[in-house]
Image 1 (tube, rainbow over the protein chains, first blue to last red):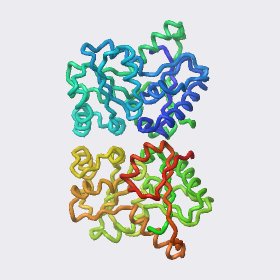
Image 2: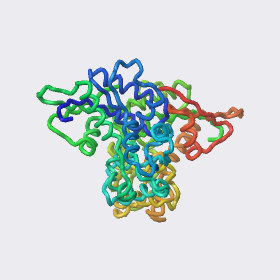
Image 3: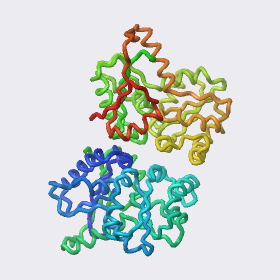
Length: 245
Length: 245
């Protein structure tokens, strides 16, 4: 959506969320959403797999006055259901996401006979944040082989990479799982959904003026900037701010 | 100090601190100290290497009304200065601790000719928290070999393990560094100092009644309990509570 402007919030002073409890995640997520709402956005995408999994159980948008919003779970599930032939789907995510059971529930509601094999991968986030993403990184390969062993053994033909950070490990995951396994990136599916929804509602931006990309973080701008390039790329319209929640 | 009662706070809803900025760490630490102060303790020990390193620069105890307190830096430095023969000291810690430069400053003030070799070890905390502490754990050994390579090459004869979590990796670190390198655990040195200080001030507990050990966490009790056994052992007088900061 190159014609849209974006407001992004990374709660860097309190990350990671994925190792925390449901109640704490819901509390923080409510504050995050209030912040984004105060910027007058037309749609909010919860691009975090962990917060999306909590949203399924806790109505964090209730009373927020935001009518267009999306998590990443349902779109990833729909893509996985379309992709699987054998009906055997693997899911990797943070401890909080896997513990929530959201992927099993959503997959079973669309495909009652599905076999779901899940695995929490708590070391993937720190590995990515410390730049251990190279295809030949021995540490990450060793950890990934351990995490993916059971999903491989169970012969899943589709794997949902249920955390924002995991697409940066896609090459390593693909090498281990093999060419026949389809990898689903929830973020990409949510972006496709957002584009479709905004088009349906005739809410796509028609103004041809310059677009902005405002990135807010809650810890220092300097530390955040180090990660921005790896995750979000950069452009001349991108500006980074520190905010308090 | 088996005759003492303890109040412990783990800010589990916002950990890890070690990857965050100085300002955010100082903000959270001030709230942590206010909480412990409200429990009428006679002494506060900042057992976290990261917060201790920030304390050296930011006077977080100023105006707190607590007269007895301690971090872990100075005691570890004194032990290292006593232990080193070659005057070559290694320091490992979180990114925030290493960035602060507190160990170089303290070591140089006691031993002006000291050669200090530091290395931030950001993956050690998540490895410990995920139980990758076994002496033969391949992932942790690989990461530790990478982190310790330069300290080994520089022939340090003493190594300060500057983060609460690292003593759980002591065997692996010792295997890599070899028998001739003395490992310093800041927590143990701070405990010795606290015992000495309380004795000097005649503040050791003389009441022979039952002792309490109250453990407070800011995220869920259930998740915290999983880590308590690994770090703190357990006893019948130990009770776990959730609190809000």
